[in-house]
Length: 78
Image (cartoon, rainbow, N blue to C red; front, side):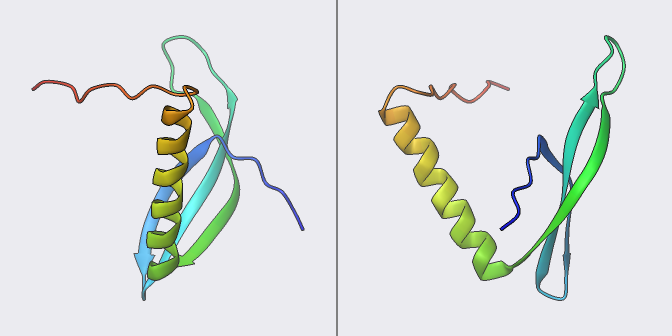
């Protein structure tokens, strides 16, 4: 099994019921400029898989908050 590390997602698109996510890594950051990024892969998911992943990620974040690893910031006032 291959492991791909990603710093984030550059693009998300839905085509024919498949969500495609472009995975990126930040390669350099210069003050006052946009960071340079390289695409390292693409993840393609069915809509049901995307919803399951979102649920799993939410549960993981809630558990980390409960364990004191993370804190949630209140929503910004408009």
